[in-house]
Length: 114
Length: 112
Figure 1 (cartoon, each protein chain N blue to C red):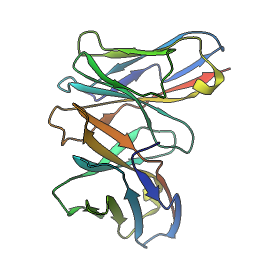
Figure 2 (figure 1 turned 135 degrees about the vertical axis):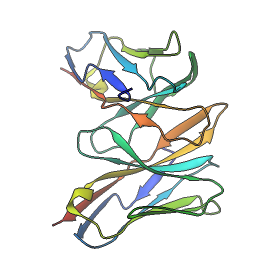
Figure 3 (figure 1 turned 30 degrees about the vertical axis):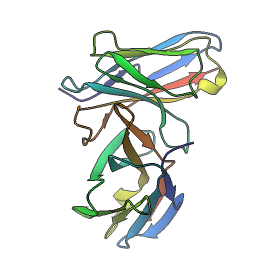
Figure 4 (figure 1 turned 60 degrees about the horizontal axis):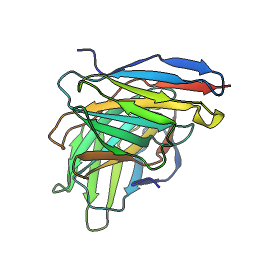
C-alpha cells in the first residue's frame, strides 16, 4: 500500500463545468475525509465517511458539492457548475477506526477554475 | 470557524534556535495532533497527544496539552532550515464518529 492517492493532481476547468475528483484511501482505513485548502489557510473540513456512510457534511458546503463512497473503499468528490471561488487544493485523508490514530493525507488535487 | 487557532501566524528564527507554536481550541477533544506541510505539498503527521496526556516527545519535538485551558504547544528544538514549513494543530472530537478539524497554521521560517 502506497498511502492515500488522489487523482487528478491538477485540474483546470472553465467556470460552469462539472468536475470529479477521486481518492483512494489506505486499504484498512474505514474513515475517509475531504478537506479544502486555500492559500495561506489550514485545511477546511468538507465531509467525512465511516465506511460507506457519510457522517457529516460541512454547512459551508453548497448543494453543488457532493461526495460518495459507494463501497466503503474509494471516494469521489463532485463539484457541479464550478465557480472561480471553488479554486483550491482538495485534500483527502484516511484513518483507522480507533479515534486515537493519525490521519494520512494524499497529495491533493489542485483545482483552478478559469 | 475553525476549531483550533494557532499562534503566532508566522515565526522567523535563526537555525539552532527553538521554535514554539501554540494552539487553542474550543470544545472537548479526544486527542490533538500536529501536522507539517511544506509549500504546495500534502500534510505530514508529526505527533498525537491524547486528552489524558500532558506532554509527549518525539525526537526534537515536544508537545504539551492543557485541557483545562484548551490549549497545546509544539516546541521544535535546535531548529534547522529544513524545518521551514507550515505547522497545523488538528483537534479530534467525537460527533458520533471521530472528526478532525484543523487550525489556520503557523508559518515557520528558519534562516540558515
